Amino acid sequence: MIFYFSGTGNSRWVAESLGKRLEDAVEDIADVKIEKEEYTLPEGEILGFVFPVYAWAPPTIVMDFISLLRLSLAPKYVFFVCTCGDDSGKTADIFCKAIKEKGWECNAGFSVIMPNTYVSLPGFDVDPLHIVSKKLREAKERIEYISSKLAARARLIDCYEGAFPWIKSYLIHPLFMHTLMSPKPFKATDSCISCGLCEKACPVRNIHLKERGKPEWGSHCTMCLACYHSCPKHAIEYSCLTQKKGQYLFDKSNKEL
Image (cartoon, rainbow, N blue to C red; front, side, top):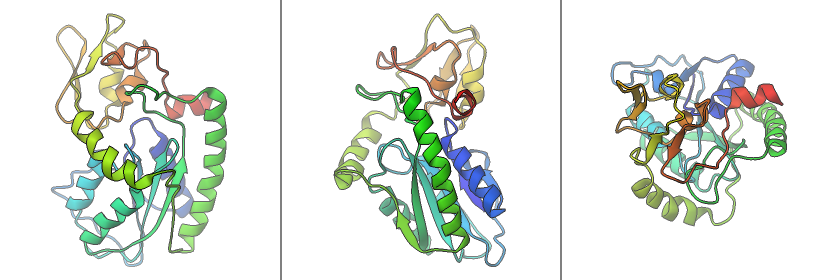
């Protein structure tokens, strides 16, 4: 069983690619009614998690899912794959600690560098097309490598932490969570055509079209930015920080390259 969370499609593609190669089921965390279900894990079946790195740590929705997840049997082999634009910081340590608190053991973990999607701070933007192409090409090779290791039930942590990982994950990440996780700065400009694609793209169903047809954000935003990247008119802004930034969706970019 492989559970995943994805906003713009990077982590979904990784999860589905692994599921196909390992012949394992894949489920979207956002669609799982975690409070009501106990998952039956057949003897010997692996348990995997695929998710993006948000400010050098796993997304809150993933951590909450793990804390609430109930299994019929304790897993014998647990792994994770995190997708990141550049580096993962101490994501592996944070994830493994959460798994340990469940009484399980995280046996393997990998990072996959994918195109950047975060645009909500100065200095952050999507990658130019030649970098997107390079990253996607190398990611496909990386998936083959990870698949072979998981098929062999390898026990290793193979994540690119980058520079100053402790500072990024344990100092910058809490600051990010405290100051930049609010959906309040989101707005739709007059370019909005009320197509509803942002509402459809939101993995946590946090967006609804108002009477006048413009989107309205609720209180449980994950900051995945799927709404921003999905807008065909580039009409969604996060404060004034995204006006001249680019957009990225895995499915669209993969077809164009």
